[in-house]
Image (cartoon, rainbow, N blue to C red):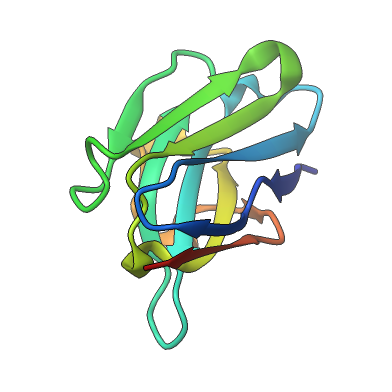
Length: 127
């Protein structure tokens, strides 16, 4: 059983940076891939970025490539999403998720591929 917990959300001004954290409570997370999604009111959940835990392979959505950086600290079992140059349209609930089967099907962009989810953290960007 994988438990994920996000932190680091908040209210910021446009142009600010923010780093989200996702702590994984699982002793053997090495076979997982971790991803970040966001969901704005009235919109579908959007894939942002993913990272394989053991090799550190990263994948980004075009919408955030160059502005967001995903990383992980294996020693802390924690993943991160560093966000730069935030815009009001980045306002959403941000969630991390884990895919335990990524080695069989590659990194997936669909939320349905991810078995475990955190509770989400709100990010609000004001203009």
